[in-house]
Length: 207
Image (cartoon, rainbow, N blue to C red; front, side, top):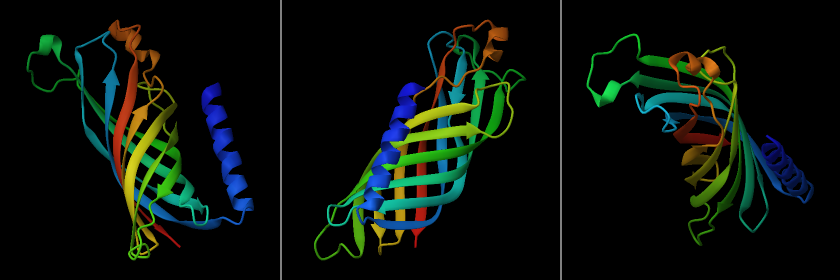
C-alpha cells in the first residue's frame, strides 16, 4: 500500500508541474468495455475462472507537454466487472450447479497514465498513435462476500488519437494485489490468492 501511495503522489506532483509549465489541458467523456479473468494461485486447481465481459463510463482529463508529445491523463469511471468461476473437480466436465459462481462487481475506478504521442509529419493533425502505461485503482461500491473492497492493477496499452479529439485505445491490466476474501476459508482454501487481470477497449472524446 505504501508503494501505491508513493506512485500516486509522484504522478500528482508530475501533473501539477506540467500544468504550471503552460501545459495544454483538456477534459472529456470516456466509455469502454472490459474482459476480465480471475487468476488463482496453484493452491486450489479445482477453481476454474472464465473470461467475463463488463463495461465502464465516466470522465477523463489530459495534460499535454507542448512539442515533446508527453502527456498525463486521469479518469474517473464507474466500472462494472463480472466474474464467472466454476468448481471443476479433477478436470471432469459437469453441468452447472450451485458450486458455479457468477457474480458482478461495481467499482469506482481511477486509472492514471503517462502517455507518449508520436508526431507523424503531414498527418499529425489527423492521426496520432500513442503508447501509455500507469496504475489503476478500483474501489468497490457494493458489498460482497467473495472479494475485497479494493484492487489495483498496472495498465499497458496502445491507442490512436483521431482529429485531435477522439481517442481509441486498448490496454491490458496486470492485477497487483490479492482480491480474494477470507470467505474461501470455508471451502478449505485458506491460502488462496487471486488477482484480477483484464483487457479494456475504450473510446474518449476530449474537448
